[in-house]
Length: 284
Image (tube, rainbow, N blue to C red; front, side, top):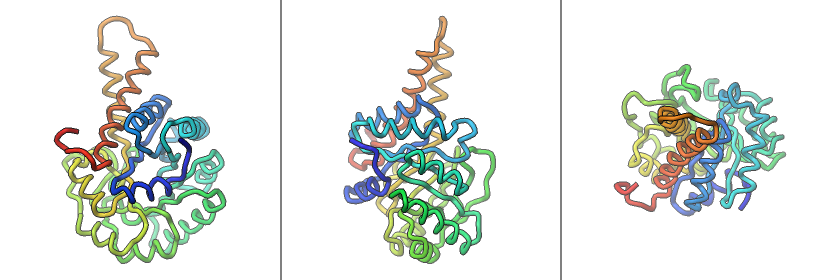
């Protein structure tokens, strides 16, 4: 198939009444595992990497690998910068061929968030790329080091924000959080339903790792079209690597590589099946 824009994938998912998985990757093994799952299930996905991850997974190395993997895949895939924090990083991602960028100014005052996001929308248009933004405060942080609390997105603000910025997708805060949940989150579905009434563009759920399969399905019914999965994939990769390294006998890179690919593949495959909304949850 092809490297495509995220907008194309979200429009397709919306028309088919399902969600699109956006899977964070940090190395070659994660890219391979995510693509393997997508190809097996014949379902388009988004490969993404957050700016806070670039210390361990440099964009100059990860970007070309993600883009090339998308080009060679048998399903459509978008390459996405998640939680871009600076225009410089957004520019680098676009220059590397990313077809989508998420610019996160959610910590700034409302009007400043609008102004900063409009700059990114203008820049991305020159590349034909999709733009995602965030409104409200999703709990935690992508690297698990800090949190800024949780503040649900105001539906009235969401309507104004989308109209003023011209973004293609909006990440909303409805009680979700990045990282590992200490207890199952209580999502504010009433807030999500009200946002859906006021906003026409696809909605995005961050902090997907740890949310129940049933709640994913309900969120998709109420307007969520893109779901971010990061921590669950990193955890699954780590568990598989640890299991391999605890086996008897000598160990080698090649078998470790296969274990990491398998860990990512299994987690991505599970979530794709949930987001496709076609199977009995009891059988997933």
